[in-house]
Length: 277
Image (cartoon, rainbow, N blue to C red; front, side, top):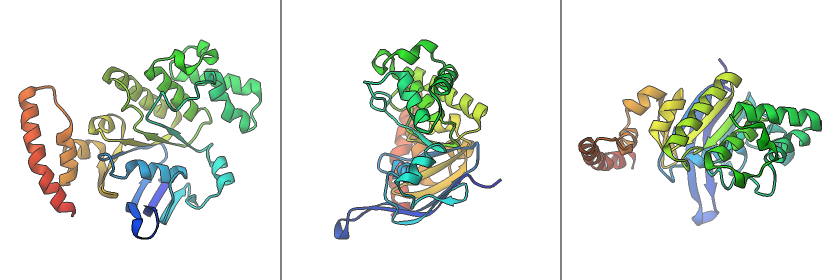
């Protein structure tokens, strides 16, 4: 199967001259149609920068980003707006990603009306999407402040899906939610992918999260991909010391086991850092 998204030798730098900071060092990865690729790493690893580069929100210094065989890293604003029907995003913060002055119906219908859909057809699709994300039809006339964090994230997911994209960049979409709500939203992501065949780039710092939803996982450290493999393999039996360090950083319920895990994590941290210097 041909890849839907192909990133090849991607370099992203910020600043100029001596103050240049290289956020990505020749990153390469691919995502197949209908696949969920997890991208994990600690804060500052470069994973969100990669997502922004794919969305056209970060500068590409060198390398290639191809979507369905088309180079998109050099697109202008007009072409980027057209590409929005194929590539969408769900951000981390369900509180800050929705306009508080707009009703949910206006928020979801705005991109449809902009793309030329009639008001009646837009309203019909909005109601369909609200049903898909398990929100009542009455939500269409309500404002974001009337909803919980989990419900707002359902609205954000509906907004991403309403134009029927082929790829969604999910940037830490559950990290701001409590554990019970996280589980429900992750199940929703899985269900929606099964029903629509949309592909996900699922950015997270949590191996437990990506294990639940992702087919494959790529691990980032200091702007580089250090390991890529099947979800079960990378999250349970990683091969790279840094990937193992991330696994050990995930807490467990048993206090004694957690103390042992913490000691192993501290010992491995020095090994991982030495390996990647």
